[in-house]
Image (tube, rainbow, N blue to C red; front, side, top):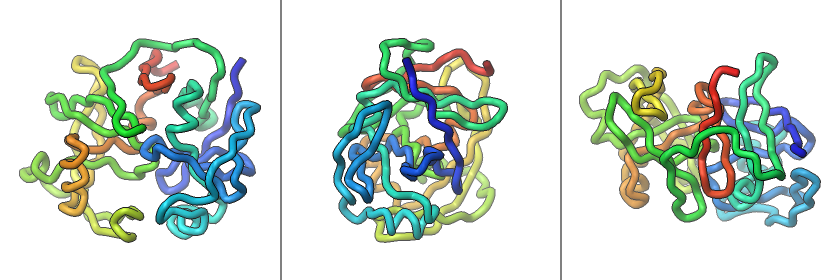
Length: 228
């Protein structure tokens, strides 16, 4: 049996479309909700009412008034979650069985968050998978010769608020011989120290799920058949 949750996109953030107001964030190892409880797949889970530097009020000010908390990897890792695009919009399917809907992809887990390898301009890059990031990122070193598409802004509680970024584009694919999609990547010297600390080349944000169906099961990432 599975439970299907409708998803809505709010400023490139993935939010479960029910009265809980949950932001789906694979870049957060911890969940929280203003009520202290998250209800998922029939389970009532006690969680903190806030995290360090992150409250419901903070997320409401940055993203949307309806957001009341985050569902992070502490809960996601205990359920199989399938991100899936249907004709009528996005759905997030949380599953309580052992079904796997595709092949495991080259991925890793670090400090409670997920990572995967992405082929960007034909080169294999080690990336954090962060659905809470509305923008994907690459190290400034990797994009120093690329033409800037436009300027942008993002925010991070770790960086004390808003910051400016430059945005470039690059073809990328989960599979070495797979179809490439033209992704947007931000870069900022403010982000570089975090990438270096994590030992990664960048961050794949929510844009990844606009091109790929992807399943998380335990600590694994699975690529289901695409386009159905």
